[in-house]
Image 1 (cartoon, helix red, strand yellow):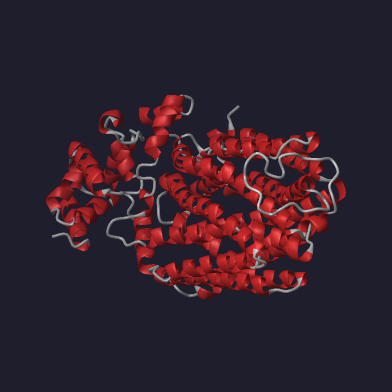
Image 2 (cartoon, rainbow, N blue to C red):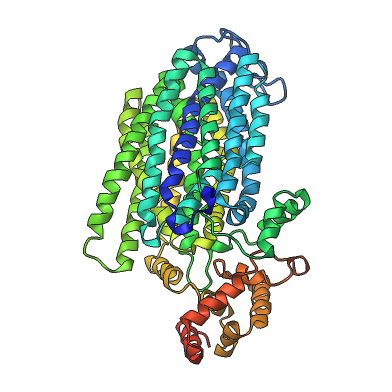
Amino acid sequence: MTHPSDVPQTKISPLLVLPPLFLHVLSASLSATPLSQFLIMTVCESLGANVPPPSNSTLPLSLPGTAVGVDFPDYKTCASRVDVQTQAALWSQMISLASAIPAFLLVPLMGKLVDNIGRRRLMILPILATCVGALSVIVVAEYSLSLWVIVAVHGLQGFLGGYTVFSLCAYAFVGDTTPVAKRTQTFLFVDAFSYFALTVGPFTGGVMYRNFGILPVFYTVLCFECFVFLYVLLVLPESLKPKQGSASNSIQSSFFSPLALWRLFSSSWSGSLDVLAVPGRGASLFILAIVTSIGSMTFAGYAFAFYFYPAQMFGWDSYDAGIFSLINSVCRMFYLTILLPFLLRKLTEGSTNPVAKIRVELGLIRTGICAFAFGLILFGLAQQGWMFYVIICVYAFGTIAFPTVRGLVSRLVPTSSGGALFAALELLQSGSTLCAQFILPSVFRVTNSMGKPQTIYFVLSSLWISALICSARLKSRELVAIEDDVVTEEAPLLAAAAAADMRRGSSRDLRSVYHQDSEVVSSAQSYRRTRSVRSYGAMDDLEATSSSEEEEVEEVEVGGLAAFQKRMSLLLDPDLVEDAVEGIAQELQIE
């Protein structure tokens, strides 16, 4: 009997990743607002239900919330207190940072492991992390332990990857199993499925917490994650093509060797963003990554904007926040599954020009960013809780930007570099989110103590406006040119990248790239050390033929050079190599 991972790549459906993705997102959304409410009630009980202490308490171990009592005071009374909101926001910040810091440090390593160990194997780590996190809340609530236990366990979750690694594996799986021409639509469908989980998760979690308390919520999360673990372990196939050569085996063995894993971690940061830049092709891909990272900064403030603030001003609990999330998710699903496909079809109907299609996609991305910015301003101006339910219909329209960006960038690199691509994106997004988690909670606490808690909405809106300004520098023709290279000219990418970076090379230098292996390796490594040549995976294939320990370069696949030569022998007649290379040199304007 063969394991699902042995199924040929062409027979793997991207839809197989939907069940674990749905349940994992459902678990996260199910527990988010109940955990925030649990923090408010815990802090309120430790501060005293009736007599608020001075609001200038500090962070040491005497911080309110280090002891959890049994009988909680009235929720609305607690939620309306500024001192409770301030301390609960501080605990929320510490919990977020505990997982965000190690997760950020490990993103490049996880991206390399995803491309070598496999998508399915790495997906198990964040599943285990979620199980441990759910158990920590259960233990704290059941035995009245300190909230520091939750902080410590979230630190462990960060080292296991968390949701960042799970989404990295899931999107790399989709990229592996989806044809290039259908990736935007496939990512759109996958995102819509995730938003369906977000539709039922917060509302269900709010209902469960209001009627049964905190424990049933996290027991349910634990059951969901156990099912996801069994599905990934027994059903989900491996989408990554089998690696050949000793370098790949060495990287896989590094996963079980602490010393080798540390070396791999150190080397993973070197050139971790190289996949986002192609010499001579412009900076549009990198700008797209910057736009998404700026947008990710806003996520660090959403707990305060959409739970702590409404709880303080309108008395919302996790049930009310669940209804808000339900409306939000229904709107998002409508925009993603009905409106966005309709717009893409109508706006590109009858057009065969790839530039026109890219322009339409960029226009939709900018429109979505505008919806986010404008919606946040409206939230900040809202005076009644019911207004949030109306404004969310405008704000949710911004969702159309995310799958469009992912579908666009996924077409700009070959599938062999899919893990590196999404790791680079996650690195920028995690880094920006980490910075925001230091800043935005402090902004909320300070403005809340000043009686201006709505300031958080205008700060978040300004971030989206800056992302919109960055998007104005995107050039559709650059994106189309890169896309064409990946789809139709993957084999000559090394020559094109090297030629663009050399600038002063000659056609004879380029011919050596095609004909002489030793010259390819030595010149390519020299250019990478001095001018950071980037070739979307081709460089990594070539580097595998040399000793990584002596030359201090990353260990990668040894069989890449042979595969490169085989493709070149099929694509190019030896008699026409010289003409082809000279044509590339002329196109890239090499003197």
